[in-house]
Length: 77
Image (cartoon, rainbow, N blue to C red; front, side, top):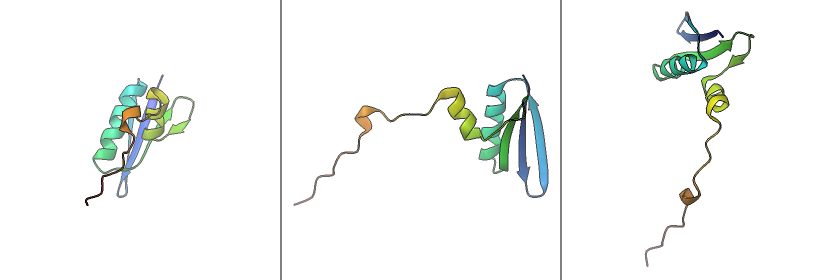
C-alpha cells in the first residue's frame, strides 16, 4: 500500500512517499515536532488522516489507568 505525507511550512509544500502506514505516521509526527503545519497522511484510496487520527486508528485511544484517578488534596490546618 502507498501513503503520502503532506506538510507545509510558510509557502513551501512537501510530499513524501511511504510504503507502510507506520513509516508515514512516524514521519508525520516528526514533521509536526519540527514545526510544519497542515501535516496530513493520504492513503492509496485517497482518504486523508491527521497524524493523531491515524495513531488512534493504529493503536487505539489511550485510556487512563484506574490508579491515575485524581485524589483530593489535603487542606493545611
